[in-house]
Length: 612
Figure (cartoon, rainbow, N blue to C red):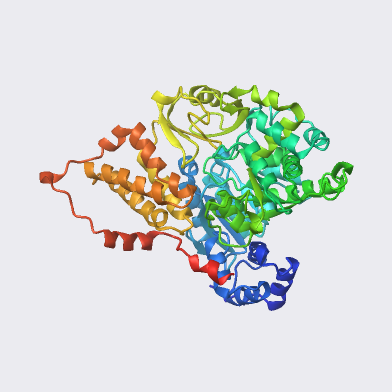
């Protein structure tokens, strides 16, 4: 590999200064250096640490945590192929082979001249148009071996990633660029978010209301968090407003990392003003003056458009001081880009990331509404939740409450992908059956449906009449369809590999236990498992759920538990009886050491102490 010099000290100093030498903006500093110099060099780590008042160990710990930061030089053009299960079913292996052949490097390698890097990455939010890839900050969709090979040839020939999208890409407006790269695939517009939405109607009503009235309006609507947890939004806002602190924050969670989910991608493309309107209404309700939208690193292609929208809102009095001419109503929003970490979709980990730390969940209580970003009361809401909040202020709580079912009010955005004729986004009232949604998507051959992504539930045909509600089948948005030609155990093994890869490494049950689960599923796939292995799976899954620190660990066994419950014949078909009634002995210490070697991330608990 060509020799590469340290990042020049003046460049590092300039980058740190651009973010005020602020330790809480460490992720921004590192991302800026990574994008400009394609790695974070040892000297840069030392210099950044000195500039922001941290130890080099702490800075290195942050770099090592995020997938999009690198301690080794990467290529000028970084190609990241999505290897989600949907992409695999859509031809990922052939697309990868074409890139490898044309670029002359294998997956995980960087070319000797530092021109190209070729890596894989989990779901990038393009399951409705797989296979997909990120090429620097450009995305390519519906790849085939032929288009992949041509893209590699064009890049080798000197074309920029933008040239792969369309001629004259740079001359397009930011919204036009998004549409040139990615199709929205809005299949069924609903009554709240994807139909006709007037601009700022909710905010204009909110400025004439007291904070308590706004909160009461949201509470009366029955709105619950749309990211998966379903906590009542009005209660969350009320709790933050009641805290005695004078400084509060609103954070929009746009870290849409659950495989199979892409609803927020579409909202950020087509309804960014509605998102920011919802944030501004929330700010008025709880008394916040500062906001952050945390945009997942895989959605970097949306960043320029969102920054343009934010600038427009500032210029027209919708952000900044005296919003809509109301004295004392001050609020602004900054965009925080993530760096490739699924765990940052968890609100505590997201706050840690915003603070410039490794994206590790925080111990609760205290809850974010009590002590969140920088120790101040913080409301963290999903993109879809904030959009609904703006519409509720416009139309009134009764309008929203009347849609859906008891306990699950309003409409829901469903990201449908997989084995169906019409993958895309469907806005429907809560309470729609899985069967009716599949009919809309053209999925008559569905044999299994993964509701809620890997952390959700897989159901079979006998459960298709179940309802998509908080009290029956809850989902943050993902509805993944599998035909009878798909291997259930392959899907389960993939999802477990995903959780192993994305575990933050903080606690042993998640870090090590999921490796055990994956190895046992692999044993089933090889035909070497027996009845005791099923009992071991259930026992270990229960332990992981009971003892893990955050939602990733408590939901990671779900692919196993839901398929054991709903597809028992899949397991029994590959389970062999124990010979002579004897079970093989199990060396737990050996297994733990092996699992630690397999687990990708390690626990860096001490980083927190060094960074104080």
